[in-house]
Length: 104
Length: 202
View 1 (cartoon, chains in turn orange, yellow):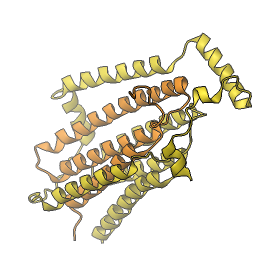
View 2 (cartoon, rainbow over the protein chains, first blue to last red):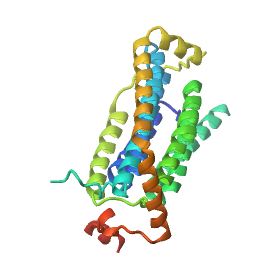
View 3 (cartoon, helix red, strand yellow):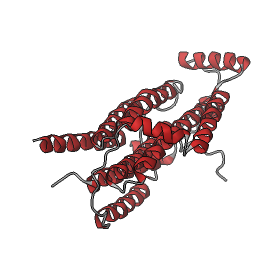
């Protein structure tokens, strides 16, 4: 068998599912951010696989799109970690189970 | 022979990526989880190389392995009294069901779709091509991305910095808490453990 688009897409789907589970189930806010990063990376891997194996017109634009996703992910993680720091300063915990101020 | 080498590279990098991600799920210590994230990201960078996307691979190593993981380690170390433990919330069973449904549906799409004949087209001179299209075709998104990054950096600094007065009080109370002579009632600052936590820990 040859390594083809399907294998890369399978790895991407599996990685996305693991990241999704981590983002949904972790208690620590930093753990949730790690899960979100894994999901973004799975999407990037899928896009790069399409760039390599897909039609020639999209080969360049998918890679540019990946660069934009990485930039937005970096901005997201910087703001997310700053928010975690502020929540810790006010509540002395960053557990998502315990930051329940908005709970009715 | 080179085909065998390619197979070996793909499967070992895929195992590194998925294994690293699974270890984040399993590991109990948050710092270990970040180290496993680094390993997983290195695996993805290797997979980009097998896809001959060398520019993206270098960017991945620089930003994810270099910057984001260090930022996460700093965030963990700046929240010293928060729980180090990487345990899971009470919603993990419904989360697992949702995730398994997502995995089954995406895998079904991957296997069932006819992706057409594979094109073996690696771009040559990617850094030049990406750079040129960024400042020609994608100039507006590029500028918006620049503004976004600036706004995010300023916002992160504005959120994370504290006034000098607050900082002095905070450092003082933190020092006393670390010394074990907190004048705050612990019940005021940390809620009592949730029933789900107690259940999970017992």
